[in-house]
Image (spheres, one colour):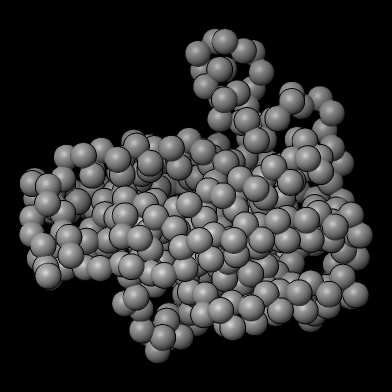
Length: 390
């Protein structure tokens, strides 16, 4: 309890600093603090449901949080003035509305087929298709379109205007339908966080709308969790406890697998490429069907700290914190200076910053994030400037 209370006090002090210096709600400094508050504040009520938070994990968290916060705060002073101006618009020459409609129809068809051919009920079958499970087909090639559609989603919202309202609506439809197709709370949360980040950096978010959005998103995420369940579902309290606090507790009760190669998690992408090219015979770690531990509730996610610590120890945590601090600080700095591509990437990757308390999203899913980066760059290269508003 002492560790939890100390962390809550430190995070609240950090947020007070943000208020005092008028640091944006959508800066890495504030997003990071709020993310960890989502873990430690519920822990005040749930801590008795779990094994004790170990001193080692608290020290690791303290190192991570302190280093990232200092880096975020330093960059705030370097470029604290938001000079964003709506003076530029870009568009793709090709109207791809029909292509998105075809993808929506295709995705809807695949959902219908998968949902009605598995061993369980409709939504449970959809979830099984992403594990993958024996006897259940997957969405297949459609999944390959996700990075492209998400990159288009980000691009059109960075350059939001009346002219592209139809495209934005269709992209929203595909993103939300995809979240249902894979029954993934992460896939639901990602476009919402990205959209809010774009609005926030551009100074166009309405606090009232934001306050309404939060409980709506919470209800939708709980709905996805319960309708995809097979049997023996937990209560909402249990679900909140597992998703907010158990990753932090679980981090302290993992046994290190000494049979894994050096940097098995941090360098997973390189191992995967090497294995595919035949350079190495080492299989990349499987992040979809990873192990569970019981604390005593089962969990298989262990915060953003996990891969860095179990690959390289304290030095790995320090290096990972510096990487996160510098990477997101630079993206945010360029975003508030009016660099549209930086804002596109910052908003797209902001989910990794927001879910630090849950798991590592950026490096462990580097293949997906690299594809998003490539598509964003290509979209900007082939798009054209259409007008300036002075």
